[in-house]
Image (cartoon, rainbow, N blue to C red):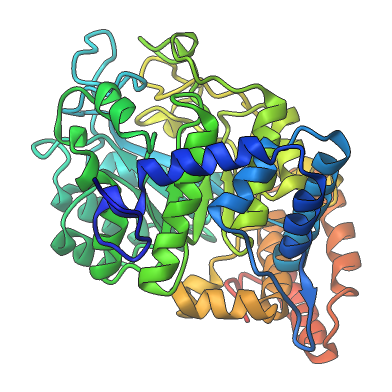
Length: 482
């Protein structure tokens, strides 16, 4: 029998089934232990220091107790601390991105994804490099600076060389004042050699969703194809880091398995990365299974309601305080609004989950990976964020200044990253307003920028940011950054 060991290189040891089951039993036994719950919440609370704030985070057992908690006033306290942590390390900034689907060819048999090989109703499509360029121009015309590229697993149609060519094409497109400055990659688990190639291509974060940490369920949900190999998939982040990629993103597809099991496994995976590589996940995504072509989410037993989903998000924020948290357009405006308060720091805007969707005037549905609940334009999302007190940020400065991996985390943990992120967010927002925004959005945005400039504590930084913003408004100069 495998023994739990967060420093192990074996999936069955760092995501250990027996440890998860013992954790869930411990959480169930203590879900109404008010004294213990208070102590765990206080441990998670940010502590102010001379240089900023620090957080200790929570173990998977501690976090699981909070997730199991049934005491209403304690749950509200969890939410309050989640918001406190979010504001301490990310302020009121929300990073904006868009997914770009390159190909829906796939050799896997995943039961929850319409791209599965046996689905004969979905049209298969793979973008040529010219089509990639056209999609990028369409995204740049919307105002995007950061993409997450997606592709099915197919060694014939989507080999690593194709992905690398697409990344090269994306970075090469300079349209008007538009540039894609960061390309994150969400593709299937691969080899150390291929991860090195992705690193050399200049990717930002490598993202891979585990879908489910419950091995028995994982094997049933992935009956055929290379993704059937649970261990190879679960150990992918270690190979990515061995290949030089220091920013990796985790995620599970909530609704496929018991959510408390998934939550414990997710936090254990974060603990494993910290224990072995000295840096936890750069991002954690929280998608829920959604309806799509050939897919009915109601067939899965693990579906979770909005209230539970909010609780999961808050508890992740307490457990892994420094990670960026991502919510996609799978979720409605109302759900996304609540999750922004509870810890989410990145959102997609104006997304299309179909291959070649951005160049089409009407949103295509025949090749969508999932139904998009939030169908607002990027301009509408930007305006909505600002009206709710959030600064939409198109910043990619840390990635391009080499502030990644442990360098990013050390800055984040000391609170020093706030000295550059806030003005960078305002400068990139100014770019968006000048180049792409509607008049109504501009009015809201420039008012917010003026107010937020006055909140920058260092006078020198404030004056440089103010001058750069004036330069953006009055010239074609772009891409200022601290």
